[in-house]
Length: 238
Image (cartoon, rainbow, N blue to C red; front, side, top):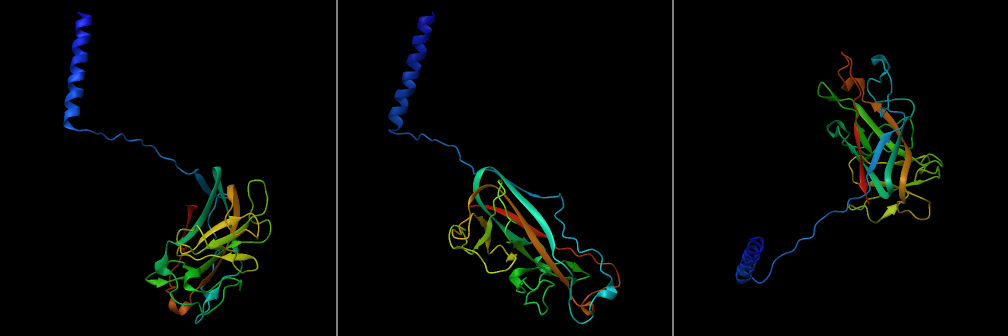
């Protein structure tokens, strides 16, 4: 019976095959899968991504002109990848509704930082009024950007929408100025000759931040207001 049963099954299979052959002369064989880039993880060194300018008394604010807050705050960032990877970062002002729409009329405390709308971000709103602005730059002094071996890296940027070409080193003494509308991508090269971002397993770098508060005459300072700047730093795989 087993033999007869097996023959019956085989006959059924053949019958199905024959029927399929009559219905069509071809079929599709799909081969699928995916290759994903090495995963990279950004983190804030020291655990705090807050550039805190402390407490400013309302009486310390200029009434008719902006008040540039003293000092440059520095936040240290580390990006670690599972395997050596070519990547960059973009900066995006999450509170762009409070950002300047024209060139700032007064310089920041550090004159190196740019005053253009693209290079500045907003410090939030209070009772419908813009509080102020801040600007950022990637520190470029030797040894301030390093790889996993401690070797120095050099920040570079590209205006190319795909960030595959057109890499350059910006002018600047201590900082490579960044824009806050994601129109530029920033990477890290091994040397100053080859501007293309290197394939790296880890990058450690510093971001300098300067800020200014709008004239007291334009603010509601009858109550406490909080500086509320927020920038998203996004990884881009190249």
